[in-house]
Every structure is written in structure tokens, then in C-alpha cells.
Length: 105
Image 1 (tube, helix red, strand yellow):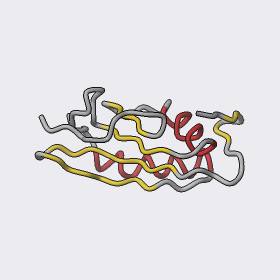
Image 2 (cartoon, rainbow, N blue to C red; image 1 turned 180 degrees about the vertical axis):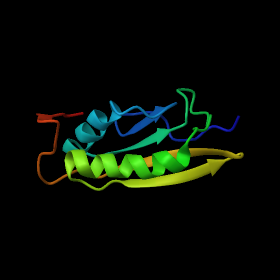
Image 3 (cartoon, one colour; image 1 turned 90 degrees about the horizontal axis):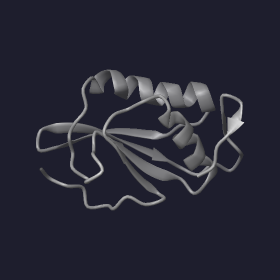
Image 4 (cartoon, rainbow, N blue to C red; image 1 turned 60 degrees about the horizontal axis):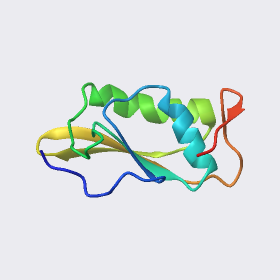
């Protein structure tokens, strides 16, 4: 399997699947210095792909906007025939909350 070169750090996260709990992480990154999250990539940086990418490409940006009022770049990427999603979260100038709470990373 091909690996992504960027190492996981405070600004780079790899997740094998999408779960709505990651909206809290996105909020935290927006309240800090921003980050890039990859979904469909395991902890060894290997692209494992995602199911339902078409639905996720619609759902993820909509959930970010409706729950936090911010816009994040959500990109569909492909490597070795496997599709994965990149979410680029920019730092916000104002505090962002998710479900009435402020999260910080």
C-alpha cells in the first residue's frame, strides 16, 4: 500500500473512517491553528479508502457549515484506485462553538 508522506502531528490527523464526533475535532482545529484531516487513511499513513464517498462529500461540508457556521475545504482524493477525503480547516478569527461548546486543540 502507498503511504502519505505527511506525518501525523498537531496539524495533521489520519482517520480510517468518518464519524460525526470528528466535528468536535474540526471545531477544535478552527479554534487553534487549523489542520488537515484525512479520512480513509489508517494510522500507518496507508490509504485504505472509504465507502460512500459521494454521500460523505455532500454530508461533511454541510455538517460543518450547519453546526459551526464555518466553511472547510473538503476534497476527494484518489491513490492507487482508493478514494479518501481531505478536510482542510483554517484557523478562525473568532471563537467557534459546536453544540454550544467551545473546543480547542
